[in-house]
Length: 445
Image 1 (cartoon, rainbow, N blue to C red):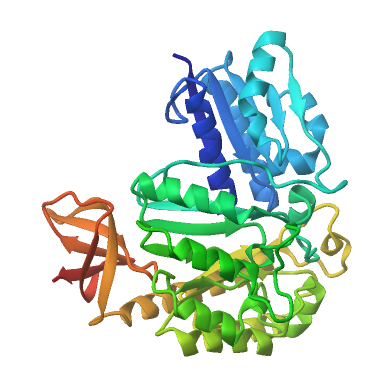
Image 2 (image 1 turned 90 degrees about the horizontal axis):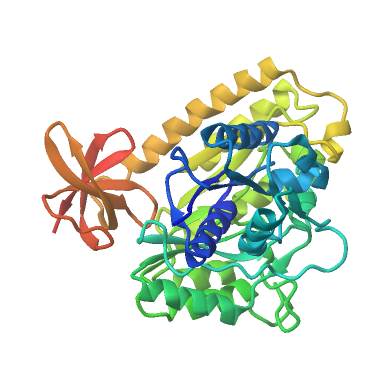
């Protein structure tokens, strides 16, 4: 039996697509092995969100070649999409699979083996109307939580972002196809679904009979959530990254009425300074963003709100950075993902004046990372004394004592003392305090 190994770089959408490609290979008779092992085929699902992601993508391709010089090396995803079809001429991969082409993985491997020559399956995803790529999974990688991609592409064109060029325009997956996959996952034992997309808030665009938000109609994402909520076996529904604009009182109220919805919301911010947001083309103000957080906190009890922040955007002054820092402290997020601005060729920000020095970016990033750590610890500490449900995932031995660990609906990691193996079971108890860094002890009822 031929062996295949896969490596994923980047976002939850990439993780979903990597899992889907793995299942395509399994269906074709391949044995899946760890990436560090010798394999006949290596598939690297690349990322291009930053220069570092580009570099890591190339490094993993070279690493695969070193692991087995005779293996078939497949480069898929955003890095090869933005680099263009000529990236194959660099000799770093035998097969180039652009975005919206991953469903052809097995046939491209067969073609390469037959022709013994490099093959490329790539097209400009920004030319013409593209259909949603029919990738699917039938089980969760960890058997407890499954990513479920329902949307692709982005029409926002933030001035710093290359992803619209890598992913193309917004496409949405048909609700019936989503529900069929949810039922398959539930039948496989999966209890938690994480809805993902490149621009999840745009779900509904690209379907003739659906709308993201027409007057007098319910948002297509809400309609889909109600349908998923009705599927037996699924106990939790977690949402991927949302844009602030989708959060309205009717939207939040509808979410709060669905008990399976996890009170864990990632609202993309990027900057806490209005002048920087305007240069980023983010289409909202800090006041509007704060209002969205207030709405979520109105309908949910201490929801876990997380966000992304970019430091060192072109022209960002010390005063602008100080405004961002002050705003973040006011919002008091559960988690923040801090990124140093990365110049992406072809974006408007790349041509802006006032590019910030790397040393300044690093200093600002360090400050916000420390703030993020402090706020996260404060949020988790605030759960002490509360009763929570935890979906168990894996055992942990700490100081000679055995625990089972998992996550609350807020995505706080908790541990219960146990000699059992109850992965994929939900248990209830009281959070009593910190057990280890980022892990809280729960006394089970």
